[in-house]
Image (cartoon, helix red, strand yellow):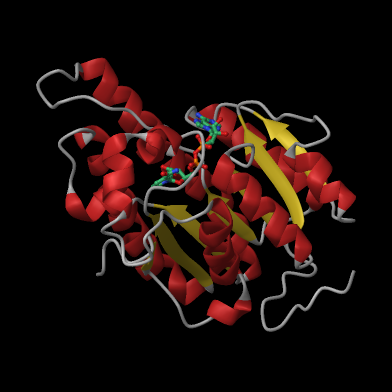
Length: 256
Ligand SMILES: NC(=O)c1ccc[n+]([C@@H]2O[C@H](COP(=O)([O-])OP(=O)(O)OC[C@H]3O[C@@H](n4cnc5c(N)ncnc54)[C@H](O)[C@@H]3O)[C@@H](O)[C@H]2O)c1
């Protein structure tokens, strides 16, 4: 098969995909591998079944390895990223897809729910960025793509802790972009609308979800592949002028 690389080419690049065993992360890994990247998948567990992400990438002739750990733990995140750098020599791009979702009215959420949400959906991103940035700055180049959510902009009655965590990721993205742009590292975020993965499926399949879809300009929710192609674009030099931005991929449901 001939791959039309167009301007999006990650040949020779090492891309770390956190949450790469998940719905969107898996698609990012497959699409990045298809345009030449060597892929390191970091997740709490990685399925190596024939239809899993590792097999899909290897079937396409790509190079991929799994690194298992809890990236919400600072020491484990540092260990995983050191292992990736040791195995592949460098990390040129990061897609920070790993996250958890949760629901609960503000007055029903206990402190443990808040602490877990902030530990995973904010501090995980902090741990990963702290670990990868020194190598990127030493080489004078790199691209980090963090994951926000439409709810970072809108707020959420049903998931206020998740909305807060994702708003923090948007702010962190802007801070890192300003701090490390001069060192050649671009930091951006992708903000998906509800997407058909383990995380988004229940909402999409609900009566409220079907009703919502009738008001989305595209008249449907976006797919993991549509979110992933935006991430791969941001990882690549095709996005060389894009810094500190949060790109919305939501079929037009939210326009910023
Ligand atoms: N699916 C949606 O509707 C939607 C909407 C907006 C934003 N997002 C965001 O997109 C990103 C990808 O979501 P998805 O839909 O693919 O979800 P997913 O649940 O399919 O994948 C998330 C992955 O992150 C991993 N992960 C979670 N905690 C981890 C930890 N401590 N250490 C290592 N790995 C960990 C999980 O094991 C899982 O494989 C997330 O940041 C999510 O918040 C998703």
